[in-house]
Every structure is written in C-alpha cells, then in structure tokens.
Length: 164
Length: 432
Ligand code: SF4
Image (tube, rainbow over all chains, first blue to last red; front, side, top):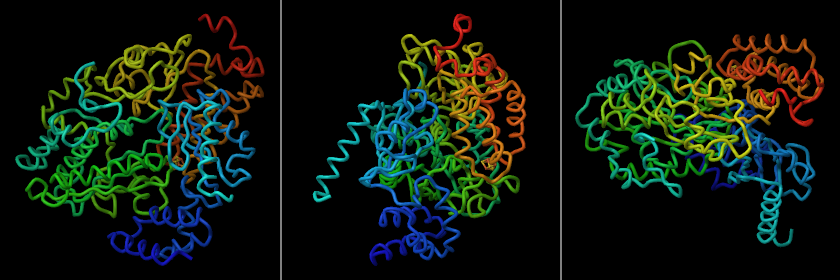
C-alpha cells in the first residue's frame, strides 16, 4: 500500500490538473520510485488513483523505457547502443557491462545492485560511448572507466547501507 | 563563422542567466511584440523570414502558424518539442543549456502569434537535468513578467509547464507526442484535421522544435530580411545547429549559416577527421536519413540542396564514418534501433523491419547470399506503405547502403564474412 502522504499528494496533483490523464507519467514515476519498480500492486494503485483500468495503465507501463515492470537493481544502467556509441565501443559498452556483471541484457547483478538495459541514443553523442546510471550521465567510457564507476557506486552504496 | 543567432551566449561551463540574456538584447522582441504588434503581424514576419522547422520535416514555420484560424476555439496550446532521441542528435540539449531564456522567449512569441494560453514543454527522461533547469528558469521568467498573467502589462497571458516523458522515440513525432501528453499510448495519428485546428484536447495546437522557436526572437528584432541574409544557400534562411559526431577531432554542436557545405563543417569547427581516419560517408541528419558518400562532400547542408542531391537534412545531426567503419554494421545497428523503437501499430513497420534486420544480420555474419539484395531492396520499399514517417526513415539507410556502398555489401557476401573484422576490405577498395 502507498503511504497516506504520498497518496494524498498524488491525488491533489491529479485533481489540480484540468486534464487528470496528463499526470499519468508523473504518477507512474512517483509510485515506481516508492516500490522500486512498477509492481502489479503499484500498477493497480496508480490506475485507481487516475481513474483508469489496470489494463489501460499496463498499455502505457509496458510501452515506456523508463517504467520497469520487473524488479530492478539499486542502480539502473541505460547503456546507449546508438550508432555513434556503437562505433566507438571496441567492445560495445552494453556487452562489456553484461560480461562484467555476469548477467544477460535486462538482468540484475547477483548482489542486486545493477540492472543493465539497452537504450536508444541518450543524446550525448559528443561524449560517446556513454550511459546513464539512475538518470545521471557518464561519457567517454572505456572498460577501465566503467570498472571505476561500478566500483565507486558499490562503495558508496555500502557506506549508505553498512550491513548489506 | 558568421553571426550567431542561437549560441551567441554559449558558455562551456553554465547556462546564460536572464540578465546575461537581456544584456544581449533578450526579451526585446517579446516586449515589442506584445506591446506594439498584432499576433498576425508576428506570423507575417516569421513567414517572410523563410524560417523552416528544424525538427526534421522542414515545414515553413510561418505557414504552420497561420494554420490556426483566427476564429479557432480556446484554449490554444504550444508544445515545444525537445524529445530528440535519434542517434546523433543532441542540439536541443545544447541549446537549452546554453541559453534557456532564448528558448523561453521563442515559445512565448509563438504563443502570442497564435493567441495560446498554455505551453507544454515535452522533455525526454535522459534530459531530466534539463527539465529541472527549464522549470527553474521558467520561474525566473515568471517573476520578471515575461510569463504568466498579463505579460509585461499587456492583455496577453500565457504559461508553460514541463511534461516529463517516460521515454520512447516515437514520442518525438508530433501526433504521437500529443497522445503521450494526453496520457494515451503514444501512437502516431494520421489524417483527420490538422493539429493547428484540432490537437491537444481537441484544441488548436502548435508543435514546434525548440531550435525553430529560438530563431523567432532574432527575426522580430532584426527583421525577416536580416534573418534570411544569414544563410549561405540561395533559398535558405538563418543559421543552423549542426551536431557533429563520429570520427572527427572535435565532436560537438556548432552554429553555422544554413547551407554551409558539409566539408566546411567537418574541416572547420569539427576539427577534421581523427588522425589516421579518412572520410567515407556520413548521415547528414540523424538515423532516419541515408548515407552520404564522398561525392557529396561539398554539398550545402540545407533542405533544398540536399533534396536535390537525393538526401535529407533531417535534424542536421551529422554522423561521420571513416574508411574502417563497416557500413553494413552501421546499417544493422540503425535497423536494430528502429525495430526496437517501432510503436508496433502497423504491419509493414512491425513485421518488415525485423525481416530487414535478419537479412542484414546474416550478411554481416557471413551467411549472406546474392538473393538477399533484391529482397532487402523490396522490403525497404515496402516501408513507404507504413502508417507514419518512422518506417520510411528507417529504410533510408538501407536504400543508400545499396545505392552507394554495394561493393561493401557484396564483399561481405563473396568473402562470407565481414571484411572489416578480417583484416579490412580488399586492398583495391582501400586505394580507390
Ligand atoms: S510506421 Fe512504425 S512507428 Fe509508424 S505507426 Fe507504423 S509501426 Fe508505428
């Protein structure tokens, strides 16, 4: 169940918009943030907030790249595999990440920290190859730099959650 | 480099503030427009300036604006579009980050021209930082009286909100974007009334790329002729943001006169080819344009000269490939992108593109046969029967690969492997 506060905030947001359906993506983002991904429960709650059927919302949730219908890791990596990044990835970034984390595309690393998703061009072609991690951009990637970034995030996460 | 219209306040480290923008003449056009010009006079100046849409289609902006009938119902909407998700394209990100108030002024002027009440700034998820920047600067503009109720003391009221997308390429298509904002599945919509008559919530709606809108303040300050005179090409108008990526020394976004020859862009601001790299081809305007081979190296980068050469300017996103890059591989990558991003609504696109992908994959893997070539050609032509412009755009690279780089395709087939993965293409080809 969504916490009362969040629910009321979203209800207000929806009511204040002249066209409540305009809030669909905002609501999905907020609810997804709460649950970590768009679980079935999250989907049904979002739909009822918006006055839509779960099926209507499912149509949208499964269409968009940044709504995750399956559990994801603490860090979601959108690795660009657009033409420019591809051209600069001796081994493409996507392949490297998957091998490094020992997962298949779309999978989550065993420690639950990283999920790798392929992404359409992320708009940083002048820094190719590039990727986004939780929405933050990293460019000019090399295998060594990727290793450093993953390690840094791992350490940061461990300091935040010491007993993990 | 000529006069700058869009990036004159560009700083490498931060966006220009409202004061810096004002010091460079910013918001003068808006002040003049809302206090002294009628909306149709603004439309006329934009029409006279010859400005054409920078989002890809190149439709004359003034004509689009005059598509909103004076008697049309209210509220009316302006939807500035920064949903660039096409490989190679990042000009709008650079523009918004260079001079956010230029973008805002352009939007408000468009709104004034069609008497709109509400603007909805559509931003893709990977530009979340930019969405936050825009929201912050919108508030600054509001407090300064350029946005909101009774702008600059006039009768005109207009406000802008930011609409966050959850990310799909097809949302960049105007009609799909309208569906996305309305909380529907973002499919394109064909036929029916024009959006300038019946768009968002069935009200008149203008969907314009932000680069297009950002040209408007200049036009109103300096006059349509001055804007026209900035271009290098005969019928061109204004300047253009060219984003250069790929095998060049200085990839980036550069403002040049519309119609600057490709060679001048690559060898000028983009710093030439990377050491040791030799130009083979480029995509002139992002992933939905076709390969431009060396024979077009001096072509002017403007709508008409490129059309004459059988090419398209698209968004002006130039992706440069060198001799050592396999163009079958590039095409394969592009088609993969389009297969994944197809909205799946119509059959030619949904079923046809994966077929093309499979043929290309087999050629690249060394399992290709001569008979695949006519099949590829035929499948690519079928895309003309798709519901929206997405599929013909996807087919462009295939058509051009077969037209200009057939030797590369054939070498994959005859050698039964990718020549670039096995010691490079044959010696004769390299010396050509
Ligand atoms: S061409 Fe592709 S993107 Fe366009 S409507 Fe058909 S399936 Fe959708």
